[in-house]
Image (tube, rainbow, N blue to C red; front, side, top):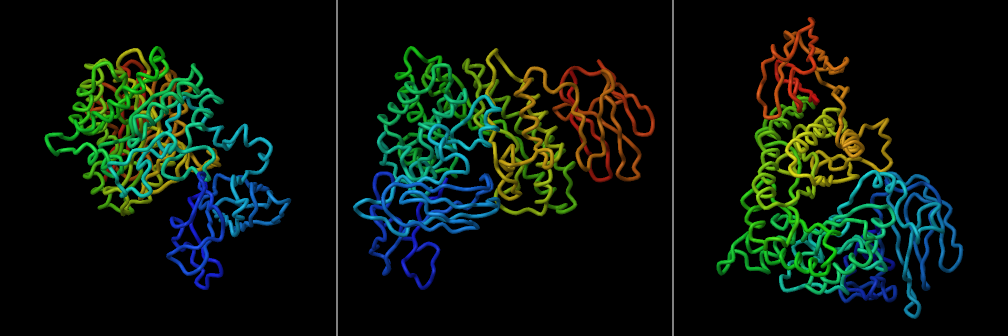
Length: 579
C-alpha cells in the first residue's frame, strides 16, 4: 500500500519533503536501494529514500511490527508511541489513532554489503499469520458478501506500465518477467497488484474474478498470463477475461498507446476498427491456452455504452466465435441540462429534485443505451452480457469542477432516495434481461469516500463505516439483490427520503401513499412508468382523503413506477415496485 519512493537529502538545511532524486538512484530487482545514502548527479547532498501512507483510515489502532532483512537504519514519523527496536530486523511501535493520520517511513541507511530489503509493516495481531492470510480482515468481511471481483484497479489497468499517463511509447511492449511480482517493495506502481494475490483471493475465498490483459503486454506476456491463471486458479472458479479497459477513452494512456501503435486513422486504418487487432490477439491467445477448458473462462469485449456505433463496429469486426460476451456499463447520472438547472438553484437544490432529474435523464439516456447494446449487439450476435462497471455516476459537469450544489451531491449518497434509485436500476435490468444466463453486474467500487467534485463511487464510504450510524443505501440495495436476486425487493421499500413529500407503506397487498405537503399547495399525486409517461391517476390511485391514497393490488402490471407529489418548484418522487 505504500507510495513509491521519494527522496530526502542528508542534513538538508531546506527540509525539502521530496528532493525529486528517486529516479537517479540505484535499486535491486525488487525496487530496494542497493545502498543508502546515495549520491545523485543532480543534487549536492547525499540522498535517502522515504515512503508514506497518506490515508490510514482503514488501519486498526494498536501495535505495528516493522520487519526487514539486511542491515540498515529506519525512521518512522507520525502520531506514534512506544518505539521499540526489538532486534536487528524488528521494530514495533504503537499507532493508537490511525484514522485521519499519515505515516512516513524512511530508510536512512542501508549497508551495501547487506542492503535493506523485504520490508514489511504488519497490522496489529497479524505478525504470525500475514504470510498465510495477507488481506485486511475487515476488508475481507465485505468482499466475501459478493460473488465476483474485478481486478481492473488492482491490476493498475489504466495507464499500465507507464510511469506517467503522458509517457507514451507505442513501440514498447512488456515481457512476462517485467510483470508485477510479489517481492516488489510496493504494489502502487504502474503495474499494480501481482496476479499471485488475485489468484489467492479467488481460491481462498471461493470468488469468481475478472482480469484485464495489459494493453502493452507482448504476445509472450499474454500467453504466460493465460497459462498462469489456467494452472493456478481452482477449476471451479470462473474467470472473465477482457483486453485492457475502456480503450476508446482518451483520458487513459492505453487509448493513446493503441492509437499510435496501430496508426489509427492513418493509411486507411480507421478508428475504432484499428483497435480490433489488439483485442483479437489477446482473445486468441487465451483461447489457445484454455483449449478444451473454455468453460472456465468468459472472453468479454468492452462496449462504449453511450456510443452504440463504436461498440457495434468493434464487435462485428472480431472473428465470430472468438469471444463470448459483450461488456457494457450500467451507470446512471445527470445530463448537462440537469446540471445547469441544479447549478442555477445552487444551495436551494434538494435531494428530491436531484433524484427526479436522475430518473428523467436515466430513462432518456442510460437505460436507452443499455437496451441498445443488448438488443442491437448482444442478441443478434448471440453473446452473453457482463457489465464491467456500474452504479451511480452522479457528478457535476464538467467532471472534477466544483458546482454550486455540491452539498446535494454529498447528501444523496446517504439518502434513501439513492436506495430507490439503485432498486429501480436493478429492476430495469431484470426487465430487459434476455436469455437464460445471469448477467454479471460489477459495482464500481466497494470503498470510496464521498466527493462532490470527483464522484462518490463507493458502496461504502469507509472500511470502518457503521451503517447503523452512517447509512450506506447503495450497499444495502446491492446486497439485497445478491441475497435474493429473483424476489428482491419484496413489495415496496418502506423508507422515506429526508426531504421527500411522500411516505409509502404496505397494507396487505395494497400500497398506501401518504402525501406530506411541504407547502400549502393542494395535495396532488401523479404516477409515472419507467419511460416517464404519466398514467391515469384516477384509474390507479384511490383517494382516502387528506393526502392519503391507496394503490390497490392488481391495478397495475408488475414493474417499477414513480409516485410523484407536486410541489410549487418541483415534484418529489418515490419508486414503487409492483409485483
